[in-house]
Amino acid sequence: MVKVWVPDPADSHFHADAQANPAKLVDVLKNGQLARLDFGIFALHAAQMAMFVVVPVALKNSGLAADDHWAVYLPVLLGSFVLMVPGIIYGEKRGQMKPVFVGSVALMLLAQLGLAFGIDHFWGIVWALFFYFVAFNLLEASLPSLISKLAPVSAKGTAMGVYNTAQALGLFFGGVFGGWLAQHHGFAAVFIFCVVLMAIWLLASLSMTAPPAIRTRLFRVGVMPADQAALLKAQLAEVAGVVEAVVLAEEGVAMLKVSLKGWDEAGARSLLETA
Image (cartoon, rainbow, N blue to C red; front, side, top):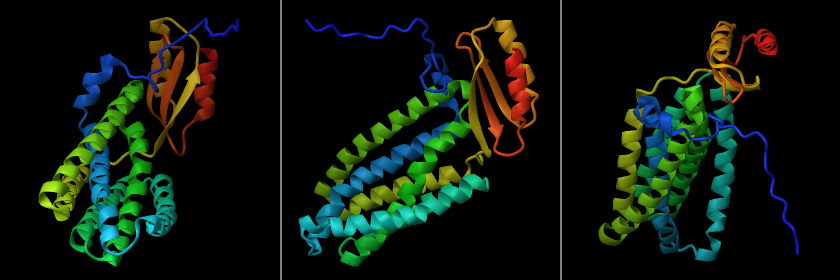
């Protein structure tokens, strides 16, 4: 008989940065900034599923054999990736993620309009797809980062859970509704649906709070009494460059949101070592 060893950790803790906490769910759902991003990932993937019900058929109708579709998808994907990287670097390094983000949503809207009006023309499809993938790659890369920046430290895992659920719902809804529209109302109706989604998202993103130029740092401090954790939290909040501090007594973890520049890491570590 083969014996299978199953690890049995002696100490297991809940991790608020990676796991959903039902107690934080209502707060996350009521957060207007997070709701904008959750709608965004829903709209992004609903539009993706809907449009790719139509695009392969349109390419075939334009005269491109199904076996040759890679000759369109591969160049536009590679080209869009080349343009996406500088946008992400600029937004993160210069603290300009909101303009990059809003511009990407606007570009996505224009790409959907291009598909709506150019779906019967081969080069119209190709150019619209190129701009679509530039916008898609920028948004797909920036949305999780924005969730992390705007979510409270103690509810980051819960916020990511809601975000992932919204993404899955978008995939399901876009595939079902896009297929129904294509069957009953034609290709143009699919892209009008996508345009409406992007227009709503663009309006919502314009009023989004500009994300702070921060990152999250986690430190293991050991399990401690609640009053000691509260004191440490207050002390860490006073450290230069710390935007938000949370000390989870039962988890033995300190989670800090800190500025990208000018935060006093040495001072924070000194406090943590004496806690």
